[in-house]
View 1 (cartoon, helix red, strand yellow):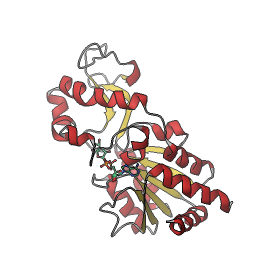
View 2: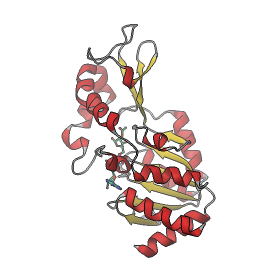
View 3: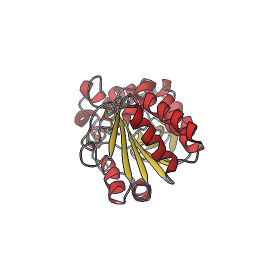
Length: 248
Ligand code: OAD
């Protein structure tokens, strides 16, 4: 493990353009449960029944009560952990350029990263489905379910539901970032949801080294990743930073 950390730290310090793709695993140490695996959200609730756009359109009050309020309770309390802070430090050092995140929790921005592509949207804002008025989630009146705008329309979070398209702007910017990096860090994602999981493939085809940080192997590990540093994101990123700072 020590020699792996040292060699990846050297790669990162020498790289000219590093991009990170992050998933729910990076926020686990902030108290936000992942989606899959033990303790995952999709173990408690069926995503097709609660996280599909058709389910939301059919019964928005039910989705608000079960999924959105649960997410709000968890996200409201969450603060960046040492993995988010470590990626912010990598940006300050001039090493990390862009984060493509599948997370909607806003923790990368809170930690200080300035170029964050929110691939699956964000949870900080709600949008009225009738008049497009936007309101911060923290200002939403939860007294009525589903919450409604002054115009009478229903509010929905600005996150992507299953069955919805990724914003073309986010997709284009992510493809661009993936195809122009020389190292991609893939942190805390099961790499099971497309098209996000395709970004490391684009990076690899464009000649980048793919370094995974995950507590488990993923479908990328064997054929796409150059190496996997197995462990908790916060711990691994901190060890990498300690080595990088020594090289400066
Ligand atoms: P998942 O829950 O599918 O995967 C989390 C990954 O993080 C797994 O591979 C774990 O092994 C790993 N992990 C857990 N704890 C970790 C830790 N402390 N350090 C490092 N790794 C850890 O989450 P995502 O891959 O982000 O989509 O899921 C992708 C998408 O599926 C989400 O954006 C969401 C979901 O349905 C939408 O909401 C549209």
